[in-house]
Image 1 (cartoon, helix red, strand yellow):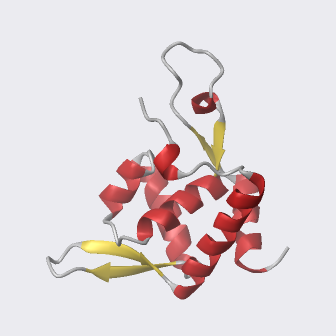
Image 2: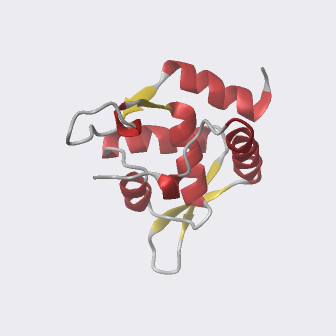
Image 3: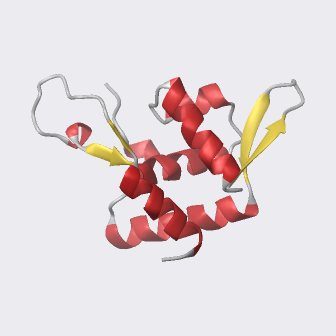
Length: 124
């Protein structure tokens, strides 16, 4: 597979992170691994509002090191743009390619219901 979706899926095959465990230790959605594609989807979704790195890390439920790796990856691939807002804070927005990839990932979500919406995630 080539193009932006191919980049995301290739990256997803080699990287993943764990969501926090549910307090009762039952097998719930929160116990499953979240792959890189889902994390990329969340970061791109968040970038629509031009958040800071701290906001991305917090809202995507990542540690700072992992969040920084994903943000650098997305910047290197030209999917995010680094900007400075009117308060002098570094923020991240979507590039045209990032908007296109987000559209494709949303289509995958609608078609297969495999990528959970960031607004539907429950964080204990």
